[in-house]
Length: 224
Image (cartoon, helix red, strand yellow):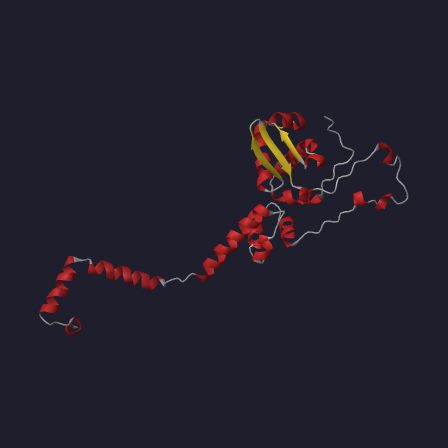
């Protein structure tokens, strides 16, 4: 199978989408993603059946790291994994790709032309919504990202198609915050007073004294 491409149209949307990953994990995930894209072609719906061994040969990463990266890409809705009888099939989310065309060698300019600076392959036409801006602004700080996302309208979070995993977590945090704001709390002095009364009434001597006063028509406050 010919696994070479003249161009690979991956957008910066993917690169910024992975900003939430810490350390070298982002670079590992990008490396694994490139390996999957080597076999996932447009004519197959960007779908490829791969073994970890194949990705290992492409990337040089150990199988444990490859497995973790694939799980991360799956959680972030970048690459969907489907288990089959003879391995797994990976489907790339086309949201992170640009339209792919086939290029013949004769169509590729040998030297830059006067208008090559305006070629569409160099244009970034993606628009970043509020969720994308927040993820990019606070990259690496997941808690801050979720705090900021939870302030967005619920409809916007539910309609997110890129940062789906973070949007779901933000929705949960938003609901938790709303329940917290509506919760009614009892004053601590009232709680302590009630507990003290319960302990007092549970005392056998106290109950005997109360019964004695009732039988003899004694009102405790009259003795003071």
